Image 1 (tube, one colour):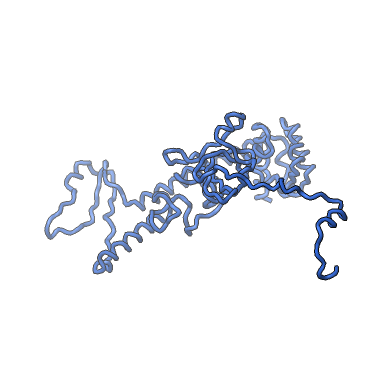
Image 2 (cartoon, rainbow, N blue to C red):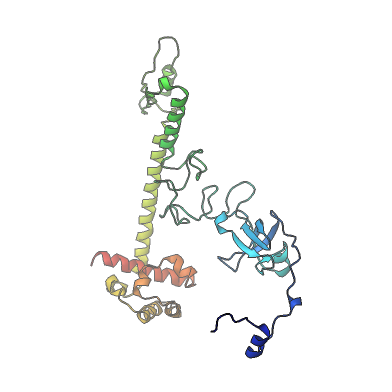
Length: 349
């Protein structure tokens, strides 16, 4: 290419046999009437089949920041003002498309699956108790239920958090030390512990009420009898309730497992198949096995379409069978019972 050559549009269009865009096609947009805070209906880009109640959170010329009501700002996204993903209110009513309401109702409680007030079910610790969460809370050791307010800005209430008792005591000590430095070195004695027994009549409690007066110090009181109205220290109550809850969950899990294993004994020939062999199955072998189960003759093709091999079969849950493979409840229970039996057989190989 030669230097100092002036570009000529006419020659270039003739050489390339092209047509230029007419100047009248370039027209400035008229100012839109979108304003911050206005409501509309918008497509959820994470799940395009859903339309949600949304708010215009910000505006930059012809670009709008869409915020879903009740959802964190992490789900906000920018769109052009003439984007087909945004609609005026009542658009769903007129077209018959379902509209997803805000997940936070007037009382401040969530409609989502998590029982924790204010929780959207989008994070925290994994585990069977927190099936709706997928990541940890920023506070180390927290299960996402809550802390005391103040410097723990990610939490909303005290009860239920394993660090709540410790952090509440720490906050109280820091506050008292700042207000009265002279007394901050003296530790506060623990409250008296009530020992409950069933050997003495309740009338003896009337004579054990603490008395106040000059020269009378605090004493440890051993209370016997039934009908004690006082409560043990809060941390003992929380530990006891947590232990009882874990015991109930363990008992229920054991009963569920025994019931599932019993169900697998009703499937002929299942006991002769080893779990280690199942892990080596191909997609066709898995489909053939599922089709061999009584009542599941037509279900094998679903496993074949989803390319479920032996390794994937052993990792499937009952929810996967129902929600992903769309099996009916009866066949799903039979397949899941087989998976349980295969996993149990691996423990004895």
